[in-house]
Image (cartoon, rainbow, N blue to C red; front, side, top):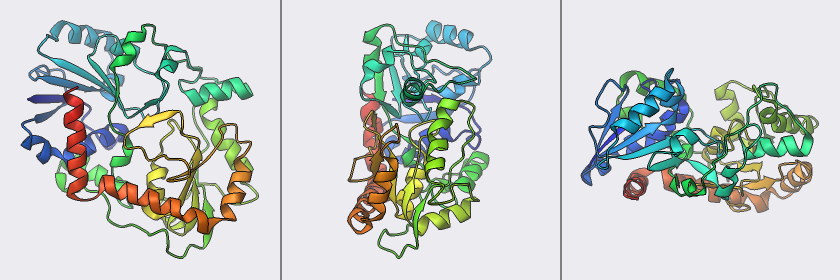
Length: 357
């Protein structure tokens, strides 16, 4: 079987694309052993349909000037012998690319809404949580965006969960390795950090929450701004340089990780690596793989309206010995999916199962 993956060539400028291909590259030899050949293609000038399966990265399409012409080309060239998979590599569970959903065979996404019927509703801000803040607090975006609802319920059957950004490296030098790989394309740089900080180490800082507050849309920034305000009597939430931030994280008992453009955040995985307890807005609306978010087992949650945020935080601070087990569970889970030959085998099995569906 031959698979072409159409995507942008500059991985350093697009973390979503890099996160998607990272575990593929990491497990490429095991995938080849199963008889599957993968080619990375970066231009439509090549014969992109010279394959059994064509996988198209949404970020590639997002940078096309002639999107409609590209869609017409795909519809024209696709035959019954081709399977067409569109992969939505955005880091949120929201707005589907309905123009592609309408004609591709399979629609992959790293995280989806558990209630897929929600995709048949328009969401203010393009996400379920931004829609929530518009309804609950009447937060309005100057740069208004509403997701395009799916009109044919049968199309929802095309949606499949692939894998999320957590499988990518999130260690101390991850950004440097990403840049080097983007430039040199050497698989030597595709390896997850082995530098972990155990939850049981001595920690002098109660809680860390270093977050940016500026986003183009108010419904996205609302949660972070409110959390920053609620924490002003507890900690400084202003951003630090990467190395200072990671040092603080490795000495913190808890990390608070709000939503950003998406629900998942690199901070979640940096927290697992550094052995803190993850505190995060409720993730029960989302399905993802791997599932890092099991309430009271791998993370502590608070409600989206933030009414119980301070009470949950104070209870956690007063019961660290009890909740430390959450950090232990989360780190073990992270290691299981990212370290060693077993993690490569696990991903290769997932990938092969998905392409056969």
